[in-house]
Each structure stands twice: as structure tokens, then as C-alpha cells.
Length: 180
Image (cartoon, rainbow, N blue to C red; front, side, top):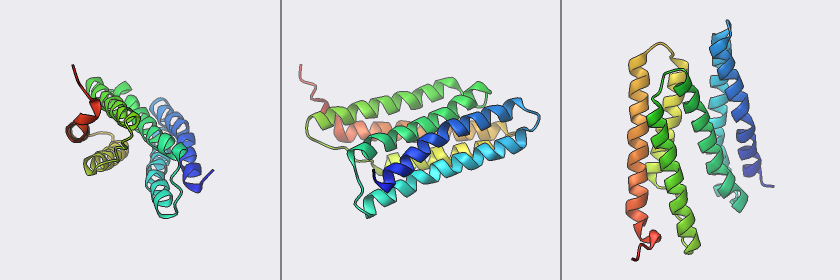
């Protein structure tokens, strides 16, 4: 197993650790300490996404396992955080549904493209979406008493998510082979 894949597996391991800390912070009298610990775990997990990608590309460690696990780990990390925010009323469920639906749709598009012998690489809009999402969620975890901030972050995540999804489909519509 490559170093990049080990880092990705570490990120997957951190997801339940993050969730336990964050959920306990919402229920416990020592919520601030646990919230900051959850935030630290989330930041480490988010940063590991960039580290494993860098290592995979620059040290020729790109693998099929990594191509499968890396985006899955990202989606699980982001979804776990967003679901917690939905649960405590800080993010609308419908927005999270749109984010998840986009992820399923783009994954389906990529699978269809691969079956036709084509690989759809991550575009800049997808990278911007990921960065905005990670940074936005980190800000929401760090600053808990500003509803306007929660709303702004939620809308930024939604807009970048929808835009990147539209861009993926616009650039790769031919992969769907929609012949009647």
C-alpha cells in the first residue's frame, strides 16, 4: 500500500473520531473543549486530503485504490460534518441534499465515462468547491453564535457545489450517450 493511500485511510479513520467529538460537544457541559478538539481533527483530516494528493502525484503513487478511496473519504468527511450541522439547526437539510445529490450525479457521470474508456479529472471548479466547503465548515465549527455566518457559508457551499456540478456535466455531456 502506498504512503498516499495510508494517509487517505488515516483520514477515513478520523471521520468517526471527529463525529464523536463534535456530537459530544453538543451534549456535554465541556462543549467548547470537545468542539475545539473536533475542529482540530477536522482540520487534520481536511489537510490530509491535500497531502495525500500531493504525495500521490509527485511521487508516482497514484493507484486505483487511491482513486476510489480518496474522493469517498472527502465525501464522507464533508457529509458527516454537514449532517451534524443539520441536526443542530445550523444548515438547511435541503441544501445538504443538493450537495449529496451533486456528488452522486458527478460520481455516476465519472463511472459512465470510465465505462467508455474516458477519465474525468477534477476540474478547477470542483477544487474551488472543495476548498470553499472545507474552509466554510471549519469557520462554522470555530464560530458558533453567528446565524448570518451559517447562512452565508451554507449558500457559498451550495453555489460552488451547483456550479461545479453543472460544469462537470456541461463539459462531459457526451459521455452519457443519450441516443434515443
